[in-house]
Image 1 (cartoon, one colour):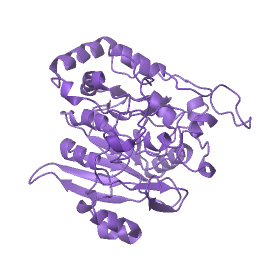
Image 2: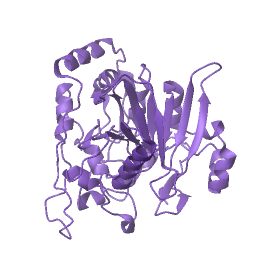
Image 3: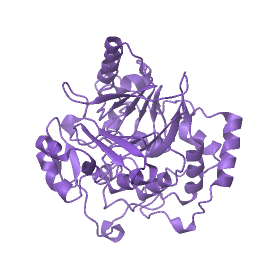
Image 4: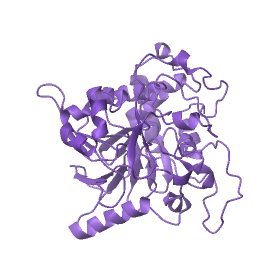
Length: 405
């Protein structure tokens, strides 16, 4: 099985797919799957642009809307995670994962799926200590604060991934696990990105949550993006332990290193994206403590014994099958022939895929719960940890700035 991995998509699906088709032709190979490590920008219409945390002058429809509308079909099964520049309102509809467009699958805020017999996990967003132990209190339409916090990684989603016991083959995160630079040529990295050196020395370059997951899951492959450069590392987990090949990739621009193709031993195809039994069991078990307000989940009340839940999910999947529920359009698509759409685009939609999955798991829908507003004083929810530096890319020139500066 050949899997292509791409760094930051930034909505440029057309060029990424054309590049892969060119590679297939020149190298006489067949690519089975495309993985994207965030900043996918699944923008369906003009309203979605309002949920995209970039300066207005950089907001553009790009090409995802063509695939959402059906005007174009993704030539490869595509799996992506979220980053820090996303149509966050749309990804919230698909919190548990689902088809963002035909043949384009969002892995969810956290998730695990199977592609053939290859198991792929991922964590969307970026780490920020100020919001890590908060709940998911943000709801569209976002204000100037929540548009910048909605994509911050939450402990709840990391704790779900920490329950995974069966081997993961590939893991995706947008920002790098903190400390990963210890396992690669960081001196060469800072020659290219000199402003990284201080953050590397102070152990602030990357995600503490991702580092915990790397230590727990120990996947053979881990791919990231976010910092707009290529960086490789090899992590040995203990003496004689398993190895993780880490690779960060750039964004899709000419002469940039934004693509890598790997080849894995796999069962013969054809290959399809399927729900993962263990992950659905974890999702079902954790649902009762879903933190839909600013308060973190109460993990003390959670029963982590998975055997009964796993057997229940197994029987349900045997009855229905493991294919994800079908893609459904939930808003009108961008129409380039009209300057501004006058269709009713606003609102927080219940995505039928999400409703169907929750019904299948016999769980209540909680994503539109606004019974408690977000924190008016974040100080009461924050531990005295270092504030993570977030890479703000306001165009092609990259600088590291405090996220809320």
